Image (cartoon, rainbow, N blue to C red):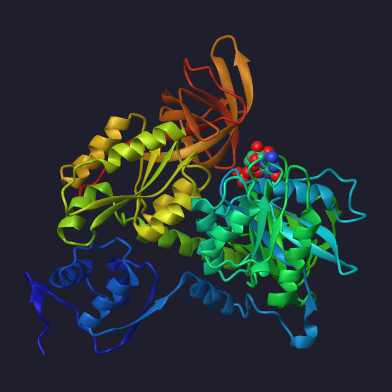
Length: 613
Ligand code: GDP
């Protein structure tokens, strides 16, 4: 049979062979696997009525459609599977306890606190920690390492519970999105004076999706107007029925502020764990688990808090965490004490890694340094490839009109973050009032005050939304994540500009121009005053690299304090340099601008012409 052709391009055809592709692969990846020209696959898709660029990451369905059309059998490999295969090639199994039933010993539950902003998550985590320091381990300086363990007496037995202390469900979502199950039980905090709010429901849905049992903490019962009964009623609608109403969810009325009923809450956690989970692990094997929080420390290098899930982690062990590796030089517990070993469900701060792993990365102990390095390098290489492949924009204001015309979307999903609730509301209501005809709806999926977070990008990724930052920027790794996932994040400082641009996009009139490319961020650690140059920021470069003569803005608590600054001087020790890379310290001079404070972040960027289409 002769191969069909479109516009003179010969279309590749298979004989029913199977092709393995990573989830989120592009047509270029596909073409590489079957030795075809990427352009010919673009042509096949066009033939099928879909406009897809060669490098854009496409959905499972699209890959499947393409494979069927060309007579290949497609096998899509998830990142988790890929990683499992990588480890298998080293004869390592991750995620299963070694040995049989008899090797398993019970372990403490790991708990995440979730709920609406301001309902008291942070306060509750503090209260639990204060009232329940594990006996005999007090005395050290309390350290915030991202997780801690407390003990509680339940039915005459001393029971331990591990809390993930990165409030909000951001960490939870990020970890779940990466397939790392970190949590056994979720405490859903609901303020009794405020009731169920949007993020309460969001949190609840995350917990349900992860199949994690929920204990409800009805907080702020000390406040006038608190109505714990109403909260129970409201949550019934979402499938959480209190035990006293015949359901199987434990509700505990507490006051985090007054330390009221904290013990009862801990007991509810233990009882829920006993009733619905079988929490056991083998403490005798090489340790495995996940990274919860990591950063670059000035004196100690890369430090990472890991949660041991099985096995026992010891000083001197060789470990791989995501794409970082190293030999455990020292370990600290949540009280700042040095420890020699850590068993299942124990969080410890680990020193000795080569670089900083991400939240939710898995860790494992291996026999040889060489194995650790090889696994880490393979993972890093894979990540780079994936980034490269996914560079294509999934959905942006520029291609909105095309997508609308092709009937690919009927609505524009937005996530709005801003510096104040007034501006967010103003922007939202003006956008919703835009007259855009009948074909398209504007939906605001989420709004909030504060920086654009990883959780926002997660939401945008899952729902093809565009993120708008009004006088705020991306925090932490959110920018990198957006770039990796191809999420369009737009920043504005003038409301009408945002409105104009979105209106233009909907009418198909938005012309790509210049786009801002983030180069790096640096955190101000010290301020030096020079009579000649004014204030000089002593910084640690947190991400990317900072280059001389590029543009910059100054952020304080995630808010933009000054725009349009220039990196006019850059030094390392006594030398003028042209760039400083991630992980290194140096001095930055922002020209005439002197209003800097410790902990401010200098974010540098460059304007690049945006490719059309
Ligand atoms: P988060 O955003 O959920 O972490 O909330 P926070 O823990 O920061 O608490 C928000 C505010 O509510 C803070 O001002 C707390 O002091 C206050 N708060 C938290 N728990 C209680 C409580 O039980 N009673 C009262 N009266 N205030 C509380």
